[in-house]
Length: 165
Image 1 (cartoon, rainbow, N blue to C red):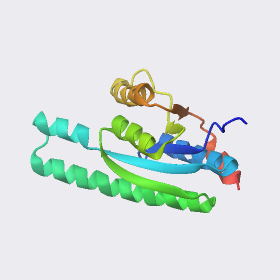
Image 2: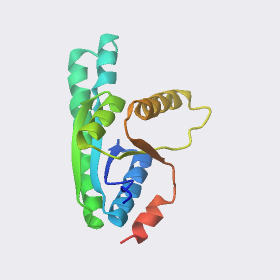
Image 3: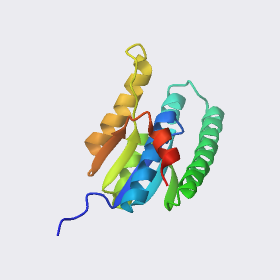
Image 4: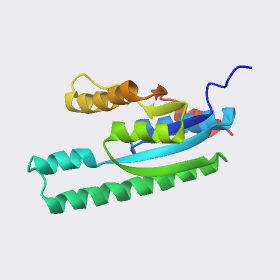
């Protein structure tokens, strides 16, 4: 008997359009293939700490930004739960804090995930800062993960999601 390629997936989200596409893609897969899904939102406290250490933020600003980003994460995970409910897909959600790539990889390991699904999009050559940050996070997840990583770049996922039951 052949082992199923997919049983458990972790979806990394951050509130962006591309991560929402990845989520919708994962929900379609989950419903179609009867997968277990965990959706993870990571508050990037690692970057906040670096900004504090470099004196760009003081301690009060550090606390404010972490609190604000945590609230954003909780709200987005509520939205994620509603999307899953619309398609009758049971999911787990988790808000984590730390380095994004490390927390995503750790979540996948703890969940015993077969795949990590993340959003990706085309980055314009002029968008060097965004390219650097996005490329580093994606590269670290791919390099450090023990399971397969799928990058969703499909722009028509919204349409597929609307018509999928």
